[in-house]
Length: 170
Image 1 (cartoon, rainbow, N blue to C red):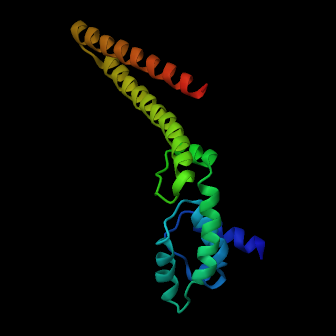
Image 2 (image 1 turned 90 degrees about the horizontal axis):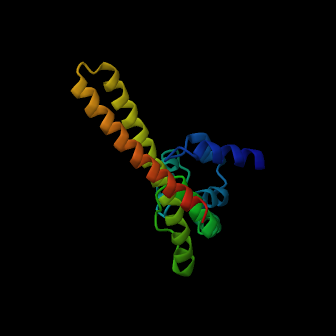
Image 3 (image 1 turned 180 degrees about the horizontal axis):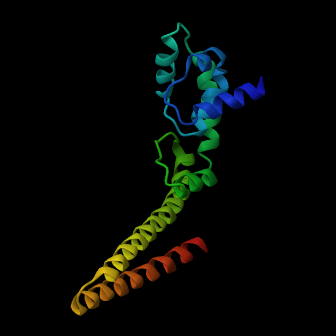
């Protein structure tokens, strides 16, 4: 039964609704726990109810919300907030009180690193495009201009990388 539950949770990871088989075999507590730990809002159960209602199966709301409460409790741990931010995921306002304060502090720290890494990737891509243009440049003036742009982007990239290293060492 645990294996079936684990397979169900893996199948649900990328889906907004449940298949007929998933509805029939759902462990509503585990599904709630999974959804809570994934940061889904309480309304997520309505998506499951809609999917399963089509075949006459309705969620056990008590079990779902009991599991979701446990999942949200784990989701709202500060170290998990850092992981959520670091992965670039969106926070869906499921934590509350002091737990939310601590979660958000870590979430923002992780998200800052993620955002810096995205800036660096965009900069690297831009430099690559400029280098391609440089290879195709037909005049000395154009090559000089492109080299200047590449040098400027390299300086920006160096600054971003220093910022990233400084944040990572905190």
